[in-house]
Image (tube, rainbow, N blue to C red; front, side):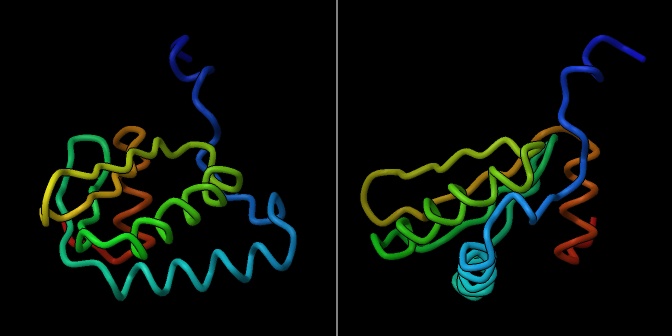
Length: 110
């Protein structure tokens, strides 16, 4: 085992990290964000999901990340907001294994 491997969280979601109301809210947000997504960018270590630049979507992204980071600590999250009407991006990354996990869970074809 490499020393880097010991520092990485295990690649396993633990929805029990959220109480039932938060699990339900997380599921609603995941569905809403899936429907609001305007594109996907492949990254070397994950994916970036593009969204229209509006405040209500930004709030949903932030709320989703606040819960998802508890149950899936192996993700590295970055919320990118540019000036003007450029799309926002939610980056989920963490390495090749995280990228494969996302592709499998979300049905993203390589």
